[in-house]
Length: 417
Image (cartoon, rainbow, N blue to C red; front, side):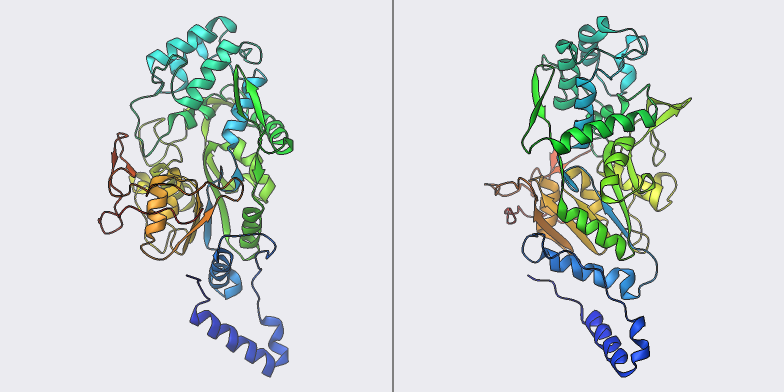
């Protein structure tokens, strides 16, 4: 159903226009909201719904303050993944360093012993501790690192990561940031800029060779999302990125939509003497190296870093008056922080079950679903299993998705594709 401008907004606009007509001297005080481009295609009435949101909540409406608008990054603002792009570039260009003492368990608290053994066997003889590994030419080492990162298992099929909270951590995402160890943030930004240039100039659909494998070799900013971010900024919103890719990497890519480093929350690692370590920034008083901006971890970092909530309370949903007005995401990794948005939630459909169950259920009427702007997914043949296995528990097992009232959400047909 089309979302129309609220009666209050329309009444205020009519009144202000009439006032300006009666008193020409007041015309200069009448504000108009910046408008989303009508030349960019959105699904159904989504552009109009977003415009209504901007009109009613931006500074142009006369509202006080700067409403907070949060975007996931990978596959939400761009097509494909900047963490992948940078990791693949570093492997191709032999930039990943041998860990200290050659002990791969120092790179992640969740790396299993079989994975550490496999990495040492493949990469141990290739470079001294602290030195770059020749992964551009050593395909065995490159393949092992790539398999652990991309598949979560060794090249022989052994599980690579274990023992983590599946709603606070995705170890392979964290590992991409942890593998940046030994470099300064500025050095990583230089690498990321080179990877960005290669991926943006490569034709859509390009594959690149890493080790013996073909992997994604291109990326594109979504024009619709660039326009939405620009319009929100013009309308007085405080726009931020919340991503499970490495902080310095997302900072580089965010430049392309007019956002600076202070407007990015990514996977941040600590530094010693200016050089990055494998240790992760803390959140919510949780154990060391156990949380990244991922599902409940995204809420934690939003609450801690942006809403200034201290301690374990950062993992809990905050009062409506404190929370973000807008959230946008594409994956189950985004479901909590997007769901916390109080006014509007934009979802790009990548067939991710929990996110799609909640957005299609649309219990409060504030969810918008849009197909991916590039390479939209076809319609999912079967309904999303909301009532049985749509939810991932902390131990990784599956269960039903429940709404804010504790009621199980029924299975949902895929309707926007």
